[in-house]
Length: 336
Image (cartoon, rainbow, N blue to C red; front, side, top):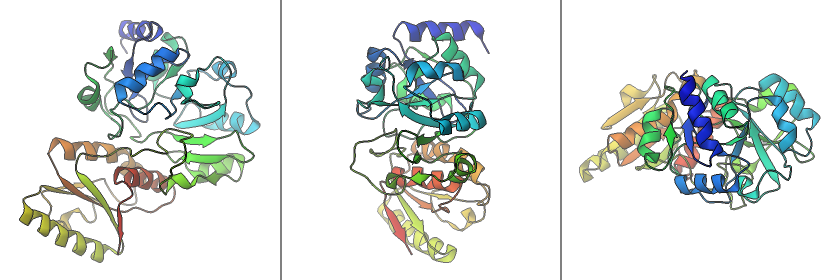
């Protein structure tokens, strides 16, 4: 790591500027979490609705008590097991956290990333960095600096290139402010993993369905992760899916539309699209998750106008993959 560059990044954030940096999940767009004007700049740079909460990133557990009213027992247990890592927890916020950071809510989302560059930036910036994904609002989250530059060049003060991210999907979000913990966004830390640590948890309906309620966490209300081309998910038996998708591809070819398919290693060879991309082996859900956003971005690079995606099992990390796909497709699903 370039210590001079990291120190410069910290000074930029302290002065109210914005820095994009890598985490283990996706690239984040960082500003001073305790400065409402920094949060406003984040919303402006992303073109993000201001009622969509930001996640506050910390570099050590000892930083948590300053920004939350209390630390529930379940939160301490989850932090002991999964921090630093891809887990965001929601607490009742302390008064020092501005409403501009929390989307007007009295709760605050907090995460401690495991990526060393991210934690160094947070430490250099004073310990509290609000950092949503470093992309224009609604676009696929960036897993490499290339796509940060594509979306935010000229809108931020500094971009740190840390290579491709390890996980490729945003963190799991769990709300710990109610009577029972609730998953608001699925991720690498699965429902099963959470329940092993703190017992039974609920899953918010917005994880799998459209919701018009005010968002309690990032990614809950608005269309997210979307490529420029139209995206449709097709679910069913393998032979039915490949046959249906190929029939649709023929129609789009006649119209002169450039087509793409999101598949797996087992099925990619069967499709007749202009661009067929495999996310990996169907049984390797971590690989599928890591490649999803990159594949959506590559379709944009290629000018693909219509995309069909196979569905994935809605359990484990597959829940997170389907959550992102459903939002990217605007919940446009064909069941065969």
